[in-house]
Length: 216
Image (cartoon, rainbow, N blue to C red; front, side, top):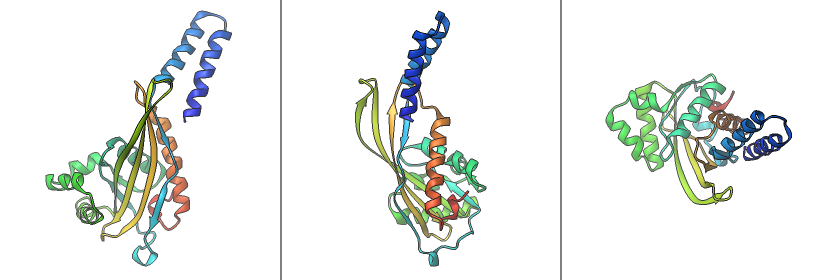
């Protein structure tokens, strides 16, 4: 994504000098400036993935999933919700719907879940309350930051830890998604971010054939 942005900037400024007339040059220069100011989300491939043994997990049984607000990055949970709704046939209950349909005690438990056993108990409660087969639980940990683009932007290294837990309390999949947030003065282009996330999720699904929840 970063390469695409740099190419757009170079094209914009090159054509601003080559094209005749002031208005095209001004417009292209404005596009390039806007691109430089925009934030970016750079995704790396999934890492450290694990799938439960087949004797603990019945394939082809998943029809629905709830995604709770991810600790440390609510927007990433919203992105996963949109990606799974568009790229699969699953019934997906998103973070906003989850918090609207559970009790205050459950909302508190979602924000306080820190161990695998916490995730299991939470999934058992949520699948019963929401009528879904699995719950996707995520937390984002932020690493060191650094300046980029001549000090105009800040690069934040992050890692998303994901657990997929069934209604029976079985952790059927774990995975980690490293990513970098390049912070500009404007938000990222969500269409680009979601396209990149869809590519990453579906590519990972092809590697985990035993995980039907992510199958197209």
